[in-house]
Image (cartoon, rainbow, N blue to C red; front, side, top):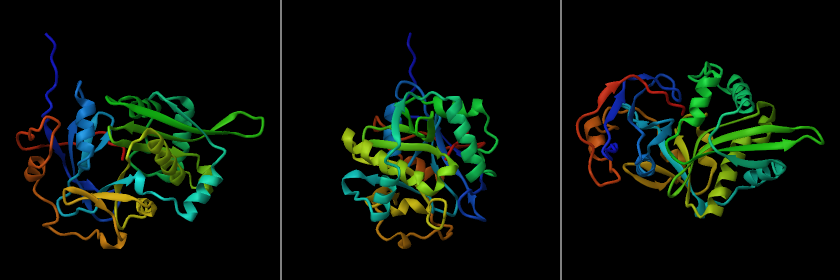
Length: 288
């Protein structure tokens, strides 16, 4: 007899821990396992409700007094590059894109380590070894791609400049995690990767590029507000970001619904609501 996992998954909540984006705050996440033959459908459905994938886990922030983290995506049809973004495209026009299956390589890991040492030396991923890196890249139960960007230095070997782990949804692309050569920081490769994913989505007829979370007040996440056509998931619906200054990161004890109410409002692929109250569990292996 063949056994399949139900479409109504169990949800869990992590214990509070220090927030990586805003000083002096505590973060908490609501999450569920992503596995089984319905994983793609569950991922597509929950991603439209502000969830994010990390390996075989789907999660979204659910902090007790803070609702600053806002899931963000670009509506491709409404995007027009700014003058600065057009310069970024020209500056990186020599890069060659190569989309591959989600397999980790030594070249990727070498670039990843250099990137972490430059930008996130004290972050939660700083101690990640090659086996954990391979798990981050390869442990995906859904349709994913590794998109590499390289350039040839004269007649020398091809140099890997940037990498993005990308999920393919039914309505867009999700940039799960990206990293680049720190020696090329002046070329704004992070911005270039977003711009190129917009072009990939446009060519594929996909309406959105999902960027993860935008956090007002966080310098680390501030660049996302610079893309036209940006939408955020707020108050249970997607809406244009408008003026970024209108979204504050203030603390308030009533800014977040109780966990049980949040779970009850989640829509699942088969139309059912999740059952039961979430259980508190340790932090799962999340990557951003």
